[in-house]
Each structure stands twice: as structure tokens, then as C-alpha cells.
Amino acid sequence: MRSEQTFTKTFQARFGSVVRSQRLGAGLSQEELAHRSGLHRTYVTDVERGARNPSLNSIKKLSDALGVPLSGLFALVEAQSGSDGSPDSTVVRAPASRRGRVNVLVAADRQVGIEPLLRSLNGDLLHTIHAVYDGSETLDYIFCTGPYKKRDMMDTPDCVFLDLGLSKVNSLEILSRMRGNPLTSSIPVVALVTQPDQNLDKARQLGVSEFIAAPVDIAKLTRALSQVGLKLSVGSNSREV
Image 1 (cartoon, rainbow, N blue to C red):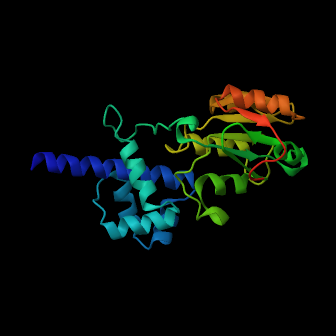
Image 2: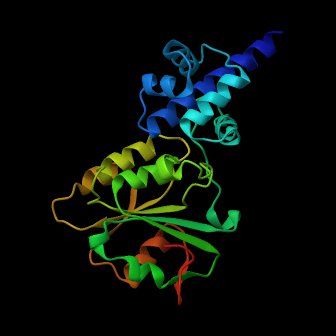
Image 3: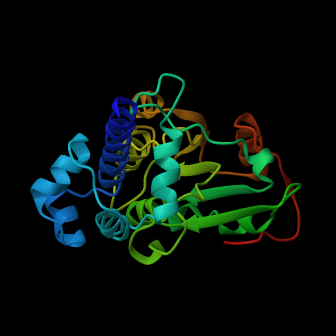
């Protein structure tokens, strides 16, 4: 009986941690999540604190409100088991080569003019290169909200190529939200530097792996991506731009 109670409490704590991280990653307050899910704000608070054992019906409501499939939520709970069993353990992502596909998200202002370069990329491995053009769309893609709400949250990019001068949502805010979410916290980020006054120190603190100075060319991009373990080659076309 005691072991069953311990298991329940552990699950509640892990599930609550996942709900909180997904909510923060999507930029939602508890009030907004409660409104979207049709649950009381106090109920949502208790779930995040691990003080409530939610029913499957409530879990489905939270899943829909967060835009994360049920399988994704439960996978995150499993990933948080960690070696120490703590609810704050970080998700460990399988290397792209082991998943058989490389998925690169390119988030750059249209004025950077990176589209011709993207079209020239063709990976040695099967890969997808998806482009977004402002900070708001970047967050929507990564956290499966807005026009990307039907995208699988578990299909996280293997690398994000991030223009530090994005509009609508500041690029450092994007980095902060990524690092605050267990599903995206370990994604490598290559930063594009377009202006001399951009806060590179803060970007480093938020885990940027590599920096590229504009203008971007094939050699710079492929070299930076190779530094984070992605092998791409030059070809006639890309799979998705």
C-alpha cells in the first residue's frame, strides 16, 4: 500500500512539473491555462504542485489546452524519471543519427535573405529544413501553438539556427523559453549575428553553441552545423523551406 501511494505521489509531482514547464514554454499564465482547459485555476495550481491526482479526463483537457498530445505529456513524465527519480530531471534527447532523420529549424528575418542558401542544402542524411521568419512564428513552431498546433510536440528540432535580430518576440526570450522547457532545453542553437550591439554574452549564458556573423554563406552554415553534430552537404534542393 505504501509503495502504491509513493508511486502515485511521484507521478503527480512529475506530471505537475511537466504541465508547468509546458505552460511556461507556451507563455501561458495559470489563469489562461485554466480558461483554455475549462478547469478551475485552483485545480491547475494543485496539479502543478503535485498535490492533485488528475483524472484522465482532466489530463486530456490540459493536453488539448497546451497543444501537446497525450502521448507527448506521458513521454515527458517518463523522461523525468532520471537516475535520481526527481521531477526536475532534464529530458535526454536521442541523437539525430539514431532517430534516422535530421530536423533543422531556421528562424531568420526575411531581410537576411537566407532562402537561396537553404534551397541549396541537401543532407547526406534524410533531413528537413523548416524556415520561420519572426520570433512569434518561431515560438509557435517550437511549442506547437497557433498555426502549428497540430504539429507533434515530440518532433523537436535537432538544431535551431536563430537570428538574434528577430522581430515580434526577442530572440533572447525565445532562448529563455527553450531552456526553461525540459523537452527543448537541450536543443543546440546556432546564432546568427546581424548587428554589433547584440547581447552575445547573454546568448552564451542561454546555451548558444555556435555563432555566425552575417552575411551567411554555405561554408559558414555547414561548418557551424557540423560543430553541433549535423552533417549536411550541398545539393540541388532542400526538402522543406
